[in-house]
Image (cartoon, rainbow, N blue to C red; front, side, top):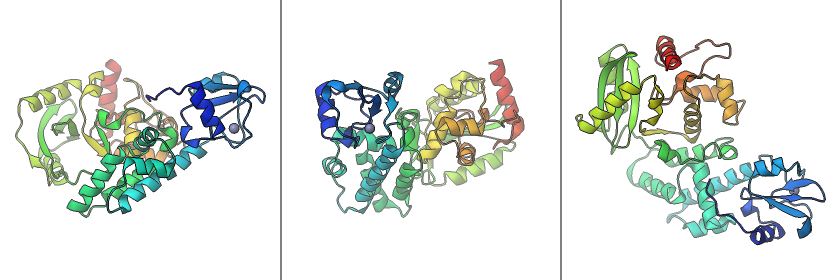
Length: 350
Ligand SMILES: [Zn+2]
């Protein structure tokens, strides 16, 4: 995450002020007690000459100092607090007739505007302004509880604690949080069904990227299901760009290139976190649901992780096929285990 580097003077001021808004930006080591702390640690302020600063938690850990028992720099308390605070901010935006400004939101949270903005985006997946805009649009256009979904998505357990995993802007990855996709309303989509080594393959894309890649045995069934899911979308005929994208996609199935194709998918923050993690499984490798749950920092969430994998609408491009049973069995696959076996075989060959 890009952060402005604080000077030592600024860091020391934050320590003296127990400025919690600086938490996550730096850590301090107290040489006399042999511990390291968050800036907002409630323990007695050490003498300046006994303090060293760290830019990252890993640096603090490498120093050999122990985590402080008072402020628990490795614990999740601050992340949870932050998630709650951002949740409160979302609530303010939702309830206000006129959306609060960034300055007002940051003031209420007791943070600098830039830090608030960054934290909000990390937790909710979109900026406060985007959130306010979508709330407004929501009020104007539909009855769907979209804003609630975004809020809920932002608050899903553990999300904030793992923001490092998620530091790449999800939008840049073609994954947008929030269930905005109202059956493709206000979207223009092109789609086709082609034959690949995995059978009938439906590929659909918006101008931003591929929004669906699914397999089936029967063209009609595939196409009917797709049209029902995107009933409000404007269907456009294939143009050169789309034809080219389809060729690229077919060629990329079972190759590492599959990850380089543009996506345009929507999901809850949790789903996106899981999908993002799936895309970090190296080509040719497999993991278990438990591994994946651990990887996203929620070791007890195997079931939710499995369900997020199952809700993936872009087969292969989000490689949910790389998740298998602990014992090496293929387990299930939304498009049939036979196809899963074929993709994995293809990936072994490279
Ligand atoms: Zn402490």
